[in-house]
Image (cartoon, rainbow, N blue to C red; front, side, top):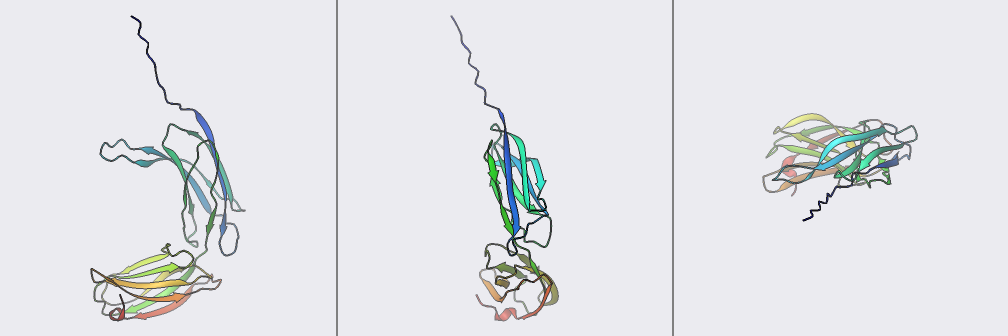
Length: 214
């Protein structure tokens, strides 16, 4: 009798994967020189009750140069789950929109980014008799309504306080004041459009939560 044993081995071939791109400020078109790009390896968890891909380790990172460009290459393998890149900004003067990109192993990948330099609003907020604290103060921009630029919670029934809010220049920005009765939100809002503003703006908001609308 003749026995034949066949061994199946997963291909662990190592290839080179590259990533490059350009980062610019949205209003001026100037390069962003303080950005950083990270590449992470993701792997399957060994948890029998919750199977998912999790961030395993940092593979590489690179900063953008004076022209806003970056590039990197790294050894990669099909045997891992996948590789994902994300972009972060080191300066508080930019709104940190952080895209992520799953990379094609063994290929040249491109990830470009447009971010926006923020204006700052020094907002004095005065209110009394909030029926149901907290009072949330949130800013959004028409540039992308899904971005939350600022989010503050004021826990007192009444207050006279100063907040620093982020806005995007040259676009309408909405400052929302919101509280909830446990079932429905009640809001008041004002719209501000900073024009090429780098200096901090100053505004006083004297709001009455009892006059907010659903």
